[in-house]
Length: 287
Image 1: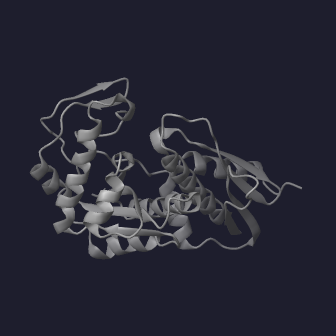
Image 2: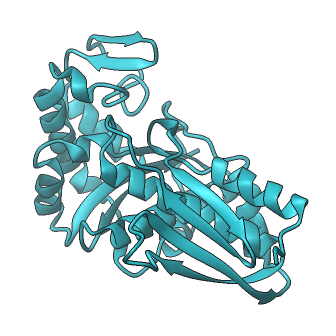
Image 3: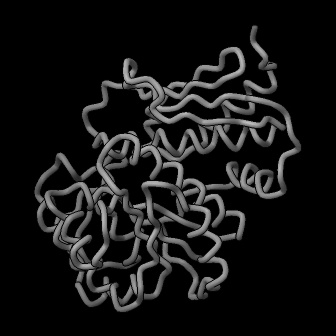
C-alpha cells in the first residue's frame, strides 16, 4: 500500500531535483514505494568522475531526508543497504509522524534558494559563529569538513595550479574544470575560451594572486576517511547540509572538485594540509 500522496511525491521530487550534481547531470533515480524512498545511482556516464557522481547522489539523499522531515515524517536512512544492488544508494523509510523542527523547515526552505555563486564574494568576513554552524552541520561519520587557515592558502593555490598545469592542454578535463574567471580571479589576465558552456583554460593564474584571493575568502575542504562508496555518499550528504546551512545564513557558496580528480592532486593537498583521509571537494562561502 502506497502512503505517498500526490503532493508528497511532488515535494520530494522537487527536493531531489534541486540537489547539486556534477555538471548538473542529476545521476540518480528516485522511487517512492509503500513507506520508503529509494535513491539509486544511474550508470552509463563516462565523462564525469564516479566519485563526483556518488557524492552528487549523497546530496540528493540529504534533500530527500529534509523533504520528508518537512512533511512531518520520522525517518530512518540506510546507506548502501543491499550488497546485491550496488546501485542502490539509500533507502529512506518513514517510520512515524512528528512535527518538523525549525531547523528542518529552515534548511528545507533553503533548498529552493541554493545556487552556485561562482563570482567573487563581497569583502565582508563571515562571522566565526556562522562558520562553526556550517562546519557543525557537516558533521558525519566518515567525513570531516576542515576550515582552511589563512596561512594554508598557498598550499591550496599550489595544488590548484599543479592540477591546472597538468590539464591545460588536455581537453578531456576542461569542461568547467578551471573557470578561474569566476572563482578566485574575476579578472584573471589568463586566456580562457567559453564555447558551448565549456571552459577551456590555456594559461594559469599567478600563484601569489591566487593565494591572496583564497586567503580573503572562507574555504572549507571536505575529506572522506576512505574512497569507498559509503564515504562518498556521506560526503555528499555532509556538503549539502553545510551548503544549505550557509544559504539559511544568507551566504552564497560554490563547490570546486575537479582539480582534486587530476593525477595525485588530492594526495598532495592532504600532505600539504596534514589532513587525514582523502580530500574530495572545496566549498567556498561568503556574502
